[in-house]
Every structure is written in C-alpha cells, then in structure tokens.
Image 1 (cartoon, helix red, strand yellow):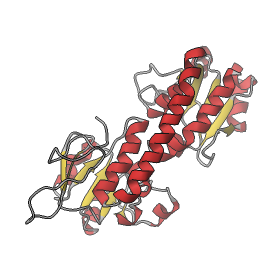
Image 2 (tube, one colour):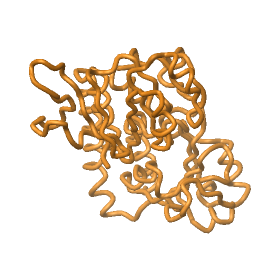
Image 3 (tube, helix red, strand yellow):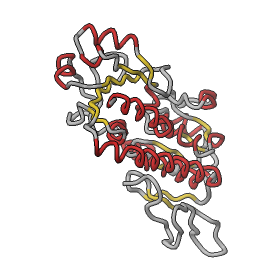
Image 4 (spheres, rainbow, N blue to C red):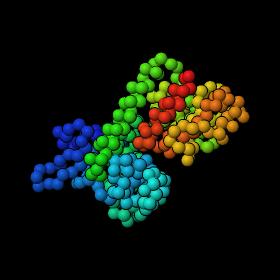
Length: 303
C-alpha cells in the first residue's frame, strides 16, 4: 500500500494534500491519514513532539523539514548529523516505553506494524511508515510534512525526489530494453556470506538501473550464501554495503582481494565496488539521490 495519501477523512481533498478539515467552523483543522499498516491515524493538528522508532523514519522526518519536531529517537538514528544530538529511547526493536512516555509525544512514528499493540497503552497516535518503493519514499516525505506541519518544505523536496526517479526511469528505459541486464551480486556487509533477495528495495533500484540481482529469487530477505554459489551465479559486478564508504560506488580493495582469491571473474575484471551501507539498505531519500551514481556504475559494466 503506497505510503502517500491513500484516503482523506473528507474525500474532497485535492491531489497530494494530506491535510483535511475534520469538522465545521467550531472545530479545529485536523488530519486523518491511512498509514502503511492500513490503519487510520487521526491528529487534531500537526504534531509538535514526535518520537521516531527507526533510523529511516528519522531521516525522512529531517528530509521533510521536521527534524526540530523530534523529541527522542532510537539508538541507530545517525543521519543527518543533527540526529546524533537527539535523546535516545533504546533500540528499534525494543524501545523503552517508559522513556517514550516521559517525552510526552503527540505522535510516534515507527516502521514496524508489530509495535502497534505494545504502544497502544501509551494512548499516543502511532503512524507506521514502511515505504517499499522509491516512489513511496518520496510520498513518505510529503506525508510527513502533512503530519508534522511542514508541507511547505516537504512537498517541494518530495517533488524533487520524484523528478529524480522520473529521470532515472527515462534514462534507463531504452538502455535496459536494448542490452542484457548486468548481473549484480549484493554483498550485504563486510562479510562475504550475506546478500539480499529481490524483496529488498535495493533489488528494485538495481533493476531500474538495467541490472539484475543474481540472488533475487531467494526466499529469505537476507540469505546466507557460499563463495561457490556466488561464482555459479556469474555476477558482472559485486556491490558491497560498507559503513563509511560514501554515497557513490568506489573500488573496494578488501572485497576485491577476497573475491580474487576465490576466483570470481568479476573481481579479476576489477568490478568490485562499495557504497555506504546505510545509503543502500535504508529506504530513505539518500537511496534515491545515490541511485544515479549506481546506475552509472552498472552502465559502465555494459561497455
């Protein structure tokens, strides 16, 4: 289900506007949106004190111009730099509910629908945000603007992300039709035995770029694989998610040496690259912004 506006409380809202009037002149303006778990979330007014329960939610809130509305977040929230200064309420999977309550939030945003029941007793509106496509990331930025009262900032930023996506689609559509897909092995971290299946959003980005995730058909989201399986999959490129690597593909000497040692042809051709793991693996605006450089690296493998 798309993360952007699916349904307004009053259906006369115009396209791309998430703010709806919920009553006559005697009542304040309110908001009702359907979140990514299919729940209707109602706010009397844009939220002013928000707790974010995942790093990707924090990134999207900052992208929507609402970082100053976040009163606390989880330990993994590390981007942008301002997020590092926020108070912490524990891990994403096991936040401290007493700490959450102590910050008196008027909205909690999580990516996990499994947290709906545990958080219910706090009696605070909970919005689930779990974008599953590049378009839904852009939609989420605009939705957060409606939730947090920063639509004047969020909407232009969301439109810019959509323009980037449209440009990628236009640039790569004819190329993908004329050339065979570049076979890509995603090394999901510093160790070589973990990858991502086609259920991960990064796999869709690779497809958009004219590539093919060689382990797209695996059942697990993060399957473990052996060097022999990678060699048998015949990737043209190895893409490594590595912390601190930067948002554009660059040579990965460590992974290159390893894959050369086990006889992977792509390594012998020097086609082993790394990018910042959080950019690749978090479904946030940075993935859209970095997709162009990833597409360029995949295109070069055609040459």
